Length: 152
Image 1 (cartoon, rainbow, N blue to C red):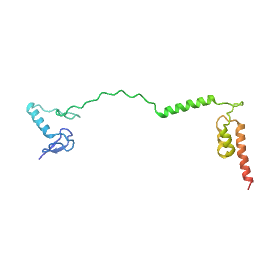
Image 2: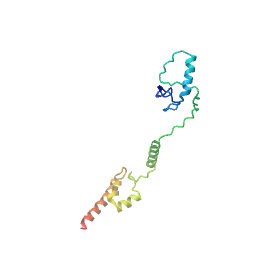
Image 3: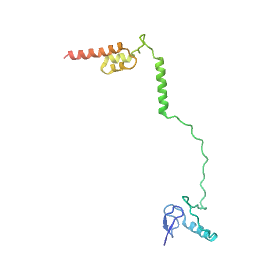
Image 4: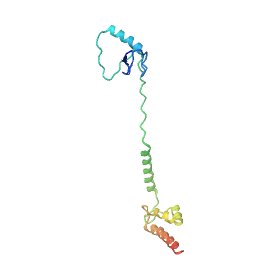
C-alpha cells in the first residue's frame, strides 16, 4: 500500500482508497482515466500553476445570470441628518420673534422655570433669549435660593 496524491485536493491518500478521504474525489475513475490518457498520449504533462485538473465525468458548474444591481440606498444617518437640518432651518424660519428680536419663552419653559428653576433656568442660556428673560429666570432662582437659606 503506497501513498498517492489526490488529483483534486493534492493531499496524500492510500493507493487502495476508492475515494479521497479529504475531498471525496473518486480515485478508481481517476486511475482508469489516467491509464487511458497515458496509453493514448505518451506526452509529458504540463505543469499547471494554480489550477486543478478537471474531471470530465463531473459536469461543469452552471453560472447563473447576473441579477440587476439593487438601487443605491442612502445610509439612514445621512438621510436623518439632512431631515433634521431641514426641519431646524424651517423651524428657525417659522419661529416667532418678540418685538425686541429675542426668541419667546415657551409655555412649558415658563412653568418649569417657576417650579424647578435650578434645572430649567439653564434653557434660557440658549441662543436667542434676551438678557431680560435670563435676568428674570436667574433672579427667580436666586430668590428661591435666598428664601431657602433664610428659612433655617
